[in-house]
Image (cartoon, rainbow, N blue to C red; front, side):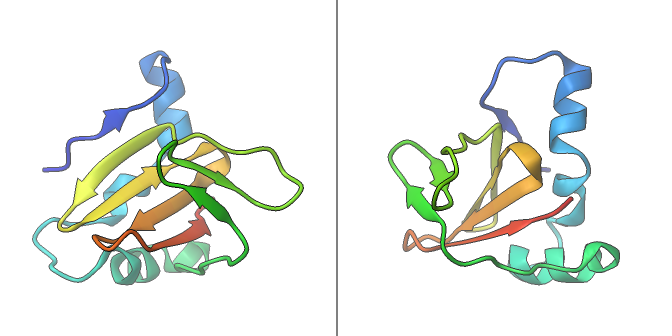
Length: 107
């Protein structure tokens, strides 16, 4: 079972809207990486399509696309050996144990 850490204060209804179904695309008993599970289970939404060009501030947890304001994560959880961060506007970052990341929009 995933324990989701909420990183912004909000009421339950707001959190449900902000996080959506994203955590439900990952199944703990499926040992494939998050990117593969997102790709398969979010197929109707386009699958997992990483977008390049983001800067990640690992210390702050923020992501920033050039000329856009930085986004702070609204929720995070560990999935196997990966960290999953959910940001406003349905941006999702998968961080690997070595610190590398992939970011995609899942709206």
